[in-house]
Length: 383
Image (cartoon, rainbow, N blue to C red; front, top):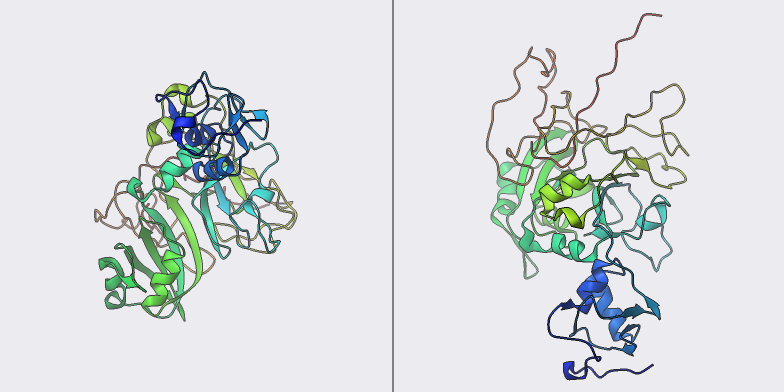
């Protein structure tokens, strides 16, 4: 097979200046991310109209015949996005040189090839977005998107407002400038404290490095929101596809870019066991279970309520290590907006906490891509 030079003038016959960049087209059909596609081109694995190319500086149209490793690429699949509650101990990469288990090795077998939007490190847990569209992945990862990533951080130490103020103004660590963070103290609990943290850049280990800079060691980190998408009640290891309507509303995608009727209830990933770790709501799951809870407990109802509606309030109560989502403060009327200030839930009213307990925490946003309402348990019958 012939091979072109890197010069754009030597582009394969049939290529024109209009159209889209070859790497973008490969990412759009799910071959890889844009950066991965560029690496494949440099390795000589991509051909256009029967000619191997070695430069991504090439525009192609629907008339061009593109192949990867000799196999023609298919037509672009409808854009799909999943929410995944990443457990501890999984690596967010396709392969790990140390042989550790990766996120992608545990996903349900019926999922197509997906890519993660950003990463969560080995010791972090919580919301990870997955998509089959490499171009969308790149767009959502760009700092210019400005989406707020929200975390619950448990730190060792006794944080004060004065200690956290530098983080709110923006800090410089070893010549690297960190943008201002949104940080609030939620609960001091013995030697540890729970913080709510919001960042917009998503630098490598940004929250851990920033906390360490002000003398606080993070010993648990849970991502609870990425822009308008929230972790909600998704359990550790569960995967849930976003509805097409949410993709259109939240991502501005056209109706012909998404497929109707694909989203279903959350499903458990193929983890052989949970290693005794607590799930995203702090309740230990039964070992080896991949669907409903252990015998004698009711199965979790599928999440299938309309998206984009206001979220219900969570049950209140003092926050402790087993309930990292409790006690958080409201950060505004939109899940990716700023603080708006509000009055606490009044005691005695519907949704309020009973006397002697902390008031029900407010949601971090009413504009959510998924509902987080929970169904209250029925009282015992007395039998």
